Length: 142
Image (cartoon, rainbow, N blue to C red; front, side, top):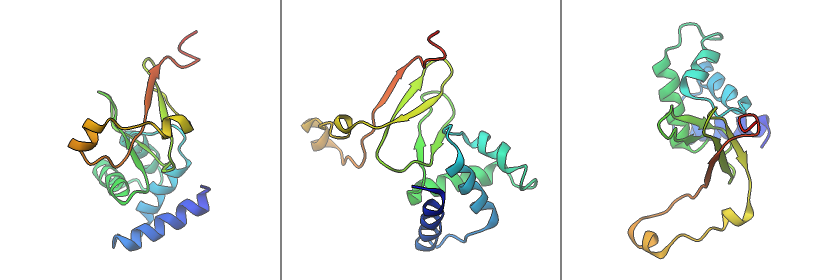
């Protein structure tokens, strides 16, 4: 999805959820779409505060959570680190470096089709499945 398509989806989802399209929300979403590093709230706050010096950290955080609830960004759990956000809402998986904490997107049809054990299907309502592989990235393994 390119930036224009992402921004159209942003406007559509904001309208559907009755969320006013403000310059601050637009800037946060645009920065999120441009990000390739699965930024944390703090990372995005540091980028947005340059554009809107009076914006609060809490506003950025609440906005990102709203975007997640609307389905236009995904939350990438931090596994003990900071919660991070992913603008890629297409089906994909993650590789997470255990040393530098970089998160890298990858696609895999076989992982997309992973079968959920019947025991879990009986106990829970599964709405999403993502695989997270952990190890050392090429930079850290040298």
